[in-house]
Length: 316
Image (cartoon, rainbow, N blue to C red; front, side, top):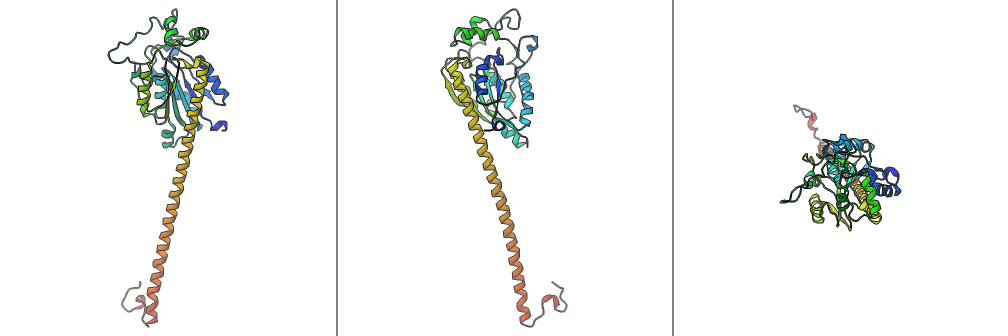
């Protein structure tokens, strides 16, 4: 495919993380000829600016970032990890290719790929009967690491080698404590685009059962990886993610091409039907005209005057 025909990949990172954490995945996608956009979320950063920010702020920020590409007619596959899934759902609402095309607009989101992700703010709540785990104390205090190392090593990087754990830990930043608070505007099940959920079997944050439940409710196709919460830090799992994303993009593009071809076929059939009806109406008029001529002809043969010439009768 030509570059303009390829979809753009919009990557939305997770809480405490920055796009640089995902560079192995981003580089692998770019090496396959794809354009990858990876903006930083407003709820994530290293400063007081994150305080008070919510997932709705993130969504507005990402939508404004994405709109110029959509207005150029570009098609987009959204890829989101962990907390980024909440933002992805909010961003995709109303911006899918199907919805924009119905409004006469160009471009749009053709698919969403969730990786070990939360899909809506309510997903961050614990199962019934369980208490909400507290945020690490002082996580917006610059003198304290955003996540305690021992916690992060277990819940985020439980199957990652130590050297990569250390590197990832050094890049962790602050996260707004209000990121999950507001109600969602959109539900994942409302998104009018194909959805794929990559479930991670050894995830210590989101149990596998809950990942499957969320994917089913969203109407997403499920792909499973045998790893923890951060497959993008594992070489083989990164390769698997690349194939999943590219296959998802290819299927979505092919589905759209088929739908466009079907729409063109329907338009041709409609045009042919209109032409045929018009032609039949023309023949109908010609036939009645011919019958009228034949009906007047015999009157002259009998020596009778046409009605229009008869005395006292109005002309026809």
